[in-house]
Amino acid sequence: MPPDASSARGGYLTIDAMVALTITVLAVAAAVALASNAVSRMAQARDRLTATRIADDLYEDLYAGERAGGQQVGETEGRSWTYTSTGAGTDDVPSAARRVRIVVDRRFGPDLVVEAVVPPAPATASSN
Picture 1 (tube, rainbow, N blue to C red):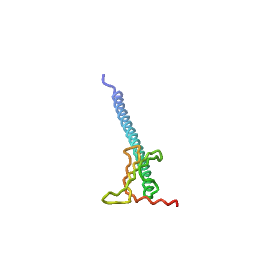
Picture 2 (cartoon, one colour):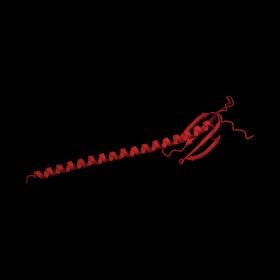
Picture 3 (cartoon, rainbow, N blue to C red):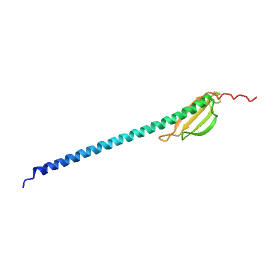
Picture 4 (cartoon, rainbow, N blue to C red):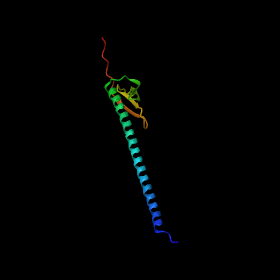
């Protein structure tokens, strides 16, 4: 008996349907992966921006002399930070400037570290 033409055609339709389904599944998987990657990058960028803003605020306060010298630890917006302020001068080259190292905790990636030299702390007003 010769094979029926409609059954041969049905086999091709099944293969076509399977190929179309495979392509659709791959396209959906690629779209989900792309969306996931975009969300991850946005979270990393937001994390980096928040850490940078906190470090900038600390630096500005240190530059203006509004924060105490030495080593300080704190938390802002759920992010822990530390800074260390030491004299920038050496025995050979004395200086009243201060060397500061600011470290802000990041959730994604390594901590943000800022090292800078700031002016000397302003003299406090006398209580006399």
